[in-house]
Amino acid sequence: MTTRTALLRAFAAAFTESGMEAPEREARALLRGCLGLTDLDLVTRGEQEVAEDDATRLRALAERRAQGEPLARLTGRREFWSLDFALSPETLVPRPETETLVEAALSLFPDRSAPLRLLDLGTGSGALLAALLSEYPAAFGVGVDLAPGAARQARANLAALGFATRAAVLVGHWGEALIGGFDLVVSNPPYIPGTDIPALQREVRTHDPLLALDGGPQGLDAYRALALALPRLLVAGGYAVLELGIGQERQVAGLLTAAGLGVEDPARADLAGIARAMIARKA
Ligand code: GLN
Image (cartoon, rainbow, N blue to C red; front, top):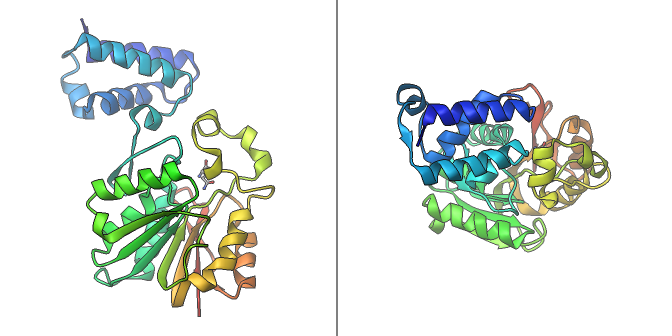
């Protein structure tokens, strides 16, 4: 038999050895995520015994974590906008900086009771769409993803969160299957320049789906497709809120302006101060 504290120490030591940046925090996160515990459980009830099969399972997971597998992939879950999402191999792990897009949308549409029509292009786990539906109880949303496994996962997440009757998820290429009529289009498209993929962190490169990352030679392929489609997809006065990769603000603004959209300058920054959410409006 072993205790929570003993496992924490062993994992922190193994993570230190494998060169992880925050070994103790990572060890705590693993126990929390895999045993359903809180930090308080670990601090005040650290001497509690862990059942042998749980300990065996945790040791195997710690081994995979030390090899660079992200915690969200080990637990198969990730929190976004305080909502819980199940992940599949075809969905990106939702990132905290993507919450910048939700905040931008809330500022553009201050009336929470508006019956907005929402569209999330490249919805992945459905994180952005679900976050928006949670804030706009009278809204209806469509999610689109090219990967059938992602669309299935988004559908399941939206249903589990109680949005089944206010959301539809399609498999498709951006907005091609849709005529239009949307008040708000959001997207966190693949934007990493293809040549930068090999240099990404191992956790991202090995465990996030390439389809959700690779934005073509300059990282702008998705924005080109989006810029062409948005004037058709949006109602007059409607907004698009698009996530940006680092340093892409000027080029993406250029593509959207060339498509006849008005672009808010500057883009909204994330908590790290990086220009992250680009806002475009159809006149
Ligand atoms: N934000 C992700 C990363 O930096 C990339 C996601 C994307 O391409 N949209 O790893």
